Length: 286
Ligand SMILES: [Zn+2]
Image 1 (cartoon, rainbow, N blue to C red):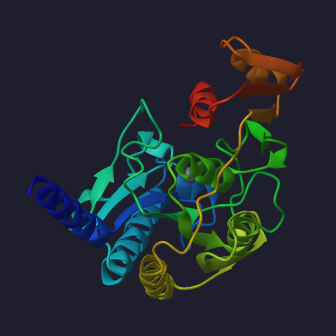
Image 2: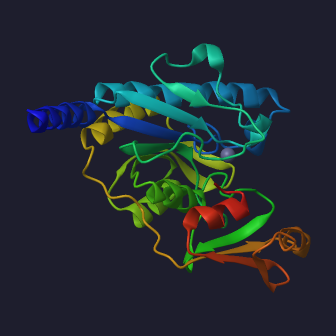
Image 3: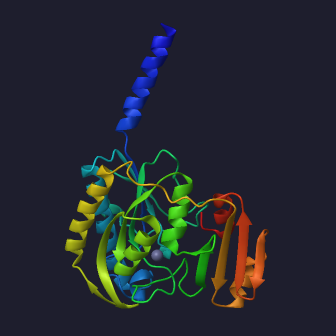
């Protein structure tokens, strides 16, 4: 009888656990449809307020699609650095998700754990130094020139995918400009994606109208969620080495004061470790 009870408990657990589809949505502003100029990404301008509305509506489209695809729980992380990670417009937010907002942050990836089944990157952008990529950068526009994880050149797509991969959560949808999507696919394989704009130069692009981008994002989010379990997380095997090349030695000087940060040359620092999160924490990226 005891054994039967135990088996029953396990089956009930498996049934409910099997029915849960938890989605973690990472958002940025530079890869949102119709966002092409630097002014749109910083709070001092009127264009920024409009860009936040475009962002919020694309995030809502992703939430809507995820729900249609069977998501039971959605956590959205507002990651664009402007205004301390407070870019989404509260009154516009979809009611069936929860939102990580504000800062300074004790952790960039708040709320993530192994219970999430999949993740989306909405409004992401290509790594620093990518030609024909809209608003390309890595973490900070004028500060970082290059970043490498275990000798592989990465931008925010690679950095954030590796952190979610640490928790065994695969990225299944990336939206942004064509170069951001190409970067994501070369790293993560044949995931779902939406190209919302084609960069002609860094601040110059051919864009889809936002209403069309939202429609495509909603459809892609639905497909991605329906494919739960089909994608592998992006795993980085230890030992971990993260190398960062800055645009000016001053930035490396500041970083080199942090314990466990090695100076490689005037502009370059390296952090090594066995645990990816530990290394990312030192760099302020987790
Ligand atoms: Zn950003």
